[in-house]
Length: 187
Image (tube, rainbow, N blue to C red):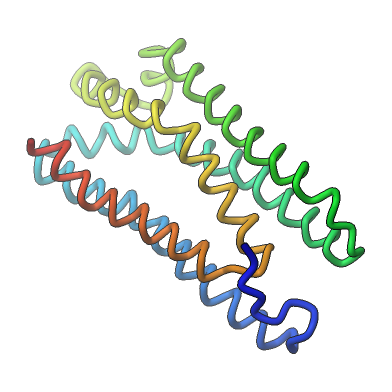
């Protein structure tokens, strides 16, 4: 997987610039998901739809935190193993991280489905927004395990020395989101 951009041989300042710029761009692309959703939901459904996405947003932030827990933790461990030249420990750590992120997403989804309206009201839903929040939450919960696994993998791929690949994967997901939003909202 590694595109070997000089890990272990290149100057740290050059590596830091290369990784930081690609990581910052990836984070901007990740933020675009919510912005694009807000634009399409606002135009297709209206302000109550925007309120519903705001109600569900804390759930997605918790999910993002869980994915970073597993992905960045595994990335740090992967880097330590690579520094020690202990390549045997890496596959198990990466697999555990991806499975952990997926199961974390599954747990968040199950809590979202089981707590239902009680969770949504706790996050600020009103009688006017509850049906929109329920519909939007249903979709977000369904995709949560895959989204968390993908986000964890992005951290691992960056640590493997392939920040361009991680950024490209994030960009592909954003493009699918941009195409999928009008299809699911207007169609």
